[in-house]
Length: 185
Length: 185
Image 1 (cartoon, rainbow over the protein chains, first blue to last red):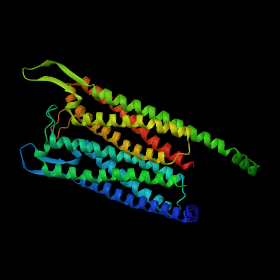
Image 2 (image 1 turned 60 degrees about the vertical axis):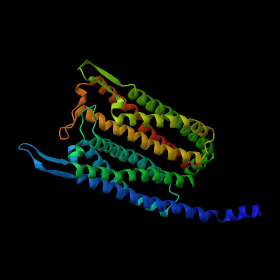
Image 3 (image 1 turned 90 degrees about the vertical axis):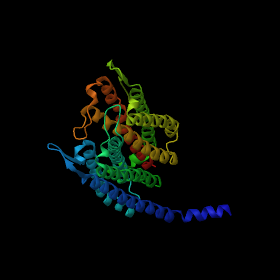
């Protein structure tokens, strides 16, 4: 009985395995789309942030925008680069659905995905550190919380982190999926 | 002639392939040691940083240490976690040298390596954002450069980033190596 079932398993293994491989490749494509939307939304939300306060003195207009803080500029640049990379990687991802035995292109994707994971994480967490500072300030370093004045600015920059952190999680999953596809050969 | 050389290549392929696989596994082990040293050095260098200025007023003693800034505390914690993970992953890495055809343990390592890459990058780049602020300050947000007073503190926290960024690069390479090992089956 057991032998029979094992034999049956073996005969149906090849097409089933191909189906699973195809499923993994399709999931890879879907996840890439999610990461593209996440990074694009983050870059746009952060890049279009600015707030002008309704009062001003003779010398100063109180205005805040993302380019006042170099770290937030880096966040926009990092997200744009990762978004561009993900769009460029779509053809390869589609190719993997058709040719599920591709090896070197998957290796290339794993390496670039890991590098892009580092880039988007760097942008997101550096921005998170600055956003935290804007919210809480730091008494010891005499850095004041600017969010008391610029509350809409702060809400916007906090919100724009979400897409980036989502892209981070998706990129970890993409690396795992590519590795699974490689291991199935 | 070409046919001959291809036949010769095929007969010597199996042992050569095993040699390359073993080489990849040994390189993996060496890189893990480098990353352990990097993250450990970063955590220790940051964790032992403090500076007391030689002057003080009646109410305030000017003292700076890493725990004054929550981001630097996160940096120490992140580096410690990644260092602990890398030490725990050593047995698996050694196992891969002996059994170069292991598959699921490599998949597990790729996934965990990617997660740890994200963690160490988050710690390093958040700390870098704060260190940048400590050096340059920000005129628009009224955050002053504290490095003018605490110069030895600033040198120390800047230096401690190096090990962490090195570990980041090593982890990207580790993911690539594991993927290459999987692709060689």
